[in-house]
Image (tube, one colour):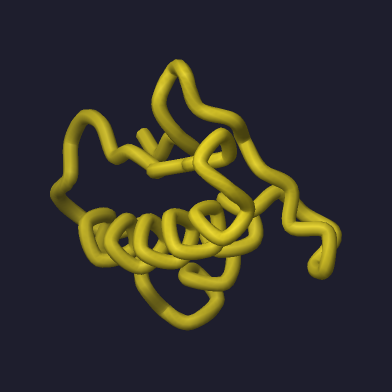
Length: 73
């Protein structure tokens, strides 16, 4: 299960792209062929956390990967 962030984190908007920050990078990662859960999570988490830090400390967002991490999407 891919989660946009922790329970106390804000799901940031990515205004320039017309999506939420997590959704945009998740879709982009899939479109670029990242189908293993851990690789996709690594890609998404890096980009989301970098962008959210630019928004300020109260907008920190760190995506999570829970459950079975094996297989392909």
